[in-house]
Image (cartoon, rainbow, N blue to C red; front, side):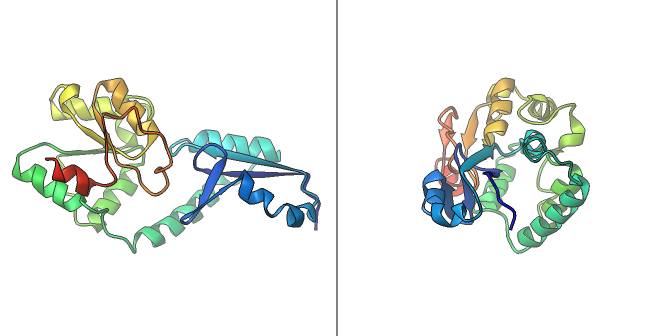
Length: 217
C-alpha cells in the first residue's frame, strides 16, 4: 500500500460535500473514519465539488492535483455507457408527460434547451417517446457557447419568437438558471437528486417537481 499524504475527493455536489446515492458525505463523515485513513498515511482530506455542467474545470483540477494526464475520451465512453445503462431503466420524471400534454392542449410552444449534444438529447427523447412532442430542441451544436453562457437560451427565445420575459424556463442546474436569467427569462427551479442541495433562491419560482408546478397552472 502506497502512503497518501493528502486525500483529494472530487465530485459534483455542494461546497465541501459530495453524494453517494442518497447519502451525503462531508468532512465530518470522513473524520469519523480518521483512524482507518491514517493507516493509509492520510494526514489531510481535501473535498472538491463542482457545479453540474462544469466538467471542463473539474477535469483540469483533477489533472492538476494528480500531475497526470488521463485518456478522457476513453473515460467518457465508459461513463456514458454506464449512464445509458442506468437511465435506460427510467421513465420521464414525474409531471413531464402531463406538462407536455397541457402545453400542447393550450398551444403553448415548448422547447428543450440542453448543453448536451443532439445525439444524447434526441436519443433519450426518442427512447421516451417524446422526440416529436417539442417544438424546438436546442443542443450544444446550436450555439457558440453552452450554459452558463446565454447563447443556448438566446437561440431558444429566437426560435420561439416571444419576448424572453414571456418564456418560462424550467431548470435543475445553477448554470442553467444563470444562462436563462442573462437572457431575461424567468426561471422555475426544479432540482434533480444531484442538484437539490443547491441554493436556487434567485429563481422566480421553486418546486419539488413538475407535479407541483402543474397544480398552479
